[in-house]
Image: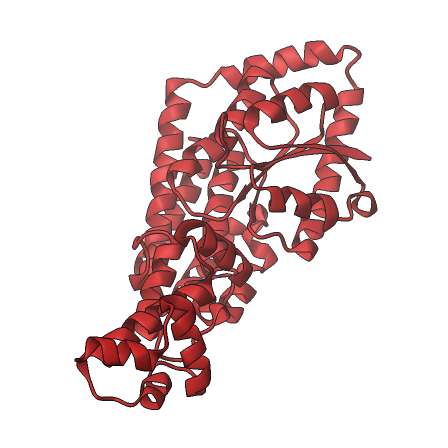
Length: 370
């Protein structure tokens, strides 16, 4: 069994890791959980895990600082998985530099986590075999620590170039600029051919690009089908043009509406914008989640956290506020107002109006139209 520790400051996420994942069936043992980076470090020293799974945003010590400490100070060479629900390119540089192995999107999807864990068994087995060749494990750790610290200014410059190229490629894909994608991807791959950087570094950059595309567009069936093709990870085939082809294909699937949403803020802000445009119709959480390419359960959780009310309650708030305006300014019947705001009947509308204002629509109308 391979040892695993998980760090996340959200209790429901930790509970999901404990109860939703069949660790033993996948060949692992969950040896402990932590709610911040410092707790995770203490757990790391006591457990000696083969796999570390960590959220990015945590109090005290965040996930990136935890990873930096593991890789640079403790010379941890095994597997690290980042868990996130947001996209922030500033994380990419650190994640690539510290050679994060995989990105997991919130909320957890049991089947996807099981598949990821199974895929990691082979490299973990290989690492364990390699470790057995050393009589003195501490000596090996010292050597690996020295190697991790030996980044030259040239390597740092190359990393900056690769990050800029990956950012450019993402921008081109999301803009649907198919003509410019081919040369941009070629520039990245040519860095390996010219022996300017290692293929491993480029692999981390492509993994980041793929992860961002999957996060943003993976909920659309046709996009997810393309993003799940194995060629994204088959480095031996990249030089044949397959990588450019995949990037162009996914770019061609993105609609103009999808592209306009890039850079407009967090997913909750996007959801609020959608609701203010469509609250008069029978809008559902799943519909809004599909429009902004995010899991509906995760959107619901983040919406409640940031807005202080549930998705459905916020819809009712918008409708009641509009109803108050109509009751003050027009002579519309209450039944017509209810229908106009997406309620199936006047009685249900009356219940919601009273729950939010403390009085009946008819009473409110009489008080404010006199």
